[in-house]
Length: 160
Image (cartoon, rainbow, N blue to C red; front, side, top):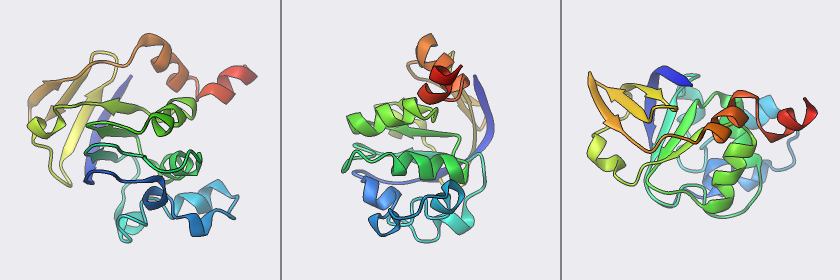
């Protein structure tokens, strides 16, 4: 599975689920409308400047806080192609996989020198991130996780 020409959107450490999807919008049920509030708690300008297919690059403990799936739903519905972080909160990571959003943990992510607005390519099966003609390696996602993502997540897999 490859993700190409994706713009980087950078965030810091300890971005919690309420920053990813503010709790004041929990009553919304339309997934498109939910997507319009992605990352609003961390950066109110994010929904208006985000380009579909972008990749979130973050520090440690991304997705900490509550276990609600809304945080992943909002990222999926605005069009985030993947989330790269130095580490993830456990439940958020599992929600990403269940809902078919690639979440890649790269502890040495800072050494890749990624900048906001930079274009990158990802090869999830080989574990390669390419930026400015330079390849960086990370632990590739396992085949079963790649299949789950490719099939649209755990609910789509179950339905099929």
